[in-house]
Length: 360
Image 1 (tube, rainbow, N blue to C red):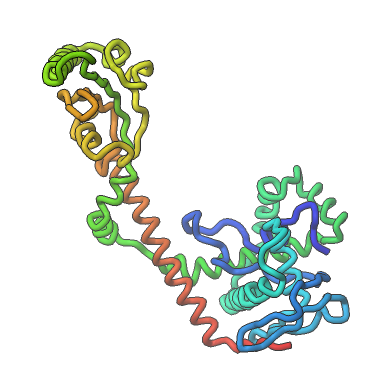
Image 2 (tube, helix red, strand yellow; image 1 turned 180 degrees about the horizontal axis):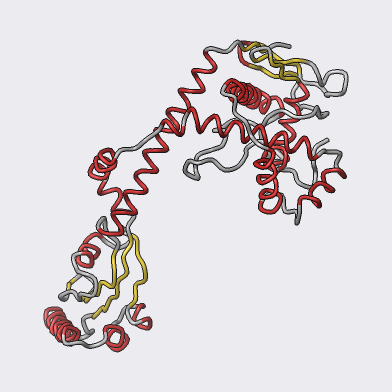
């Protein structure tokens, strides 16, 4: 039976825990969960197209057909019941009420079951072992953070109510951890990123990386007075802006001056524009602000609206701590690219040397 109170269980138990690679690295890539006990289901489509122009007739799966073999992976059988269980578990985990039909999901999930079986066979070949303590630790962690039970004992009781044994869950976790270990050994540990590659990426993508940096600024806006001649009004506001700039240079508090004189909506907040991402303001105004050193005040700047005086409070840059953070992000980007390429190549390799038969 499928665990109904915790619908994500059967899939999550197959996509297991920690691996000594960056957090984004998937335990099984895009692989589906390991197969489990047969489950009855009623597909919506009369038959399912599978690789190699083979069609598996979709039907209500009962005990008499659940063990029907629909694929053989190096003499290791995958049954129709296992495929149907995976479809049901997928729907429960994603909480889908509509979307792909069972036939469409079968077409997607059977190749993933095959891939997962191949990975488990690689773990066997590599003699990958997962100790009971590792499984118990992973289970305890998931019981609290993923499954929502207060303890393993409570979780086991809920499982029994649904007719699912704790041993079947532990087997899924063990298989998941074994696959993670073999992927780490065959893929992650064979990927490296050099400092030279990081520097090259930084130089080639500096403009793009700087776009994501933020800065914090303040602003005073002075507007020409109504009623004066155009030239006279602009000259008057320019002179006022220069006087304010002088006050600020002599130590006047920018926020207080902004509250008193600024005509911008930010005046009540002391001219505070908050933290901005590069590209949020117009290119001309942003250039005036970012040309300043943190703590500096700009000379009056004229725009079609009026005269502006800016103060740069702080800004991120590709220097110092910002450079360290950028290089770490670049390392992760390059690692991810190399990891995914190597994982794809490894999966292709084990498929090429495998004997896979998909059949009715």
